[in-house]
Image (cartoon, rainbow, N blue to C red; front, side, top):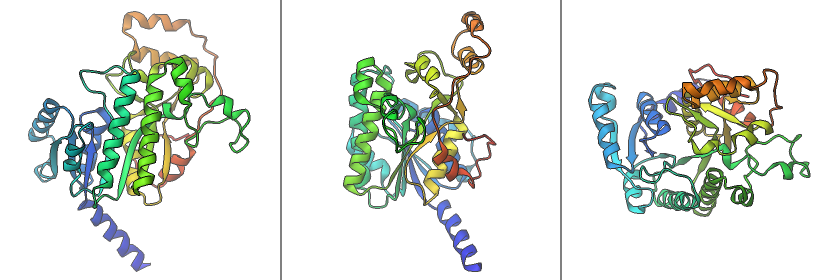
Length: 326
């Protein structure tokens, strides 16, 4: 018993001395991950594809937002996901990578070209990980849109899944996305598949977090995830996630040695007219919000998506956010 406790304490102190990389650190998820990792005692390589964003971030942390001992553990890098060598530089000496793709500021629209760009970025990142001897684990941020599109046809004939519930074992149908121009789902699916293929080929330990629609103050109706929102809603697979819960999930799958494969991540299910109205009020300007009042109060669609796998993993993880997992 004492030996186990000693090992536990040793593991805690070991985590505090470890070095990890966060890429892209400028996004909502990345910047929050950097902050949380510093609070947990990690040394963080924060990687930015935009030089101006990097300078703003450095000024923020130099301005007293974290104490001096933590700010000394923050090292910023300019790393373009399409530039393999810059990724290698940012990863040097790191034991872990938290990777999420952020569209370039000069090309924010999701289309077929964006999908090709995201696949190339995933390939570069995983190849760089394979060349980093110190790296133990990659947490790859994907999306629920890489899981839920075009799965219903398969559900009707596949008896290996319970009922017709979608979970992380499902993959979005690429042909379905191309047919209906669901570019976000197409991009996320192809990039994640490319990452998994390279990880398995190169022997890189990787887990993916497939998050729902990220709820944050700047969310608006132009969010690419929302293409096909009505179909997701009526199909019972429209899910969202709060930023703090998404960060907790990333921390959990990184620190838990038993984590493996893919994890669907959400803590909100939008399957009732009340949920839809609340979301619409967030997305639309006040002048347009009155249009949502016509939704019937008693509409509730059956939930057809589950994150039970993540729920089990996070049961003993101290999230500090008090949210419910479905």
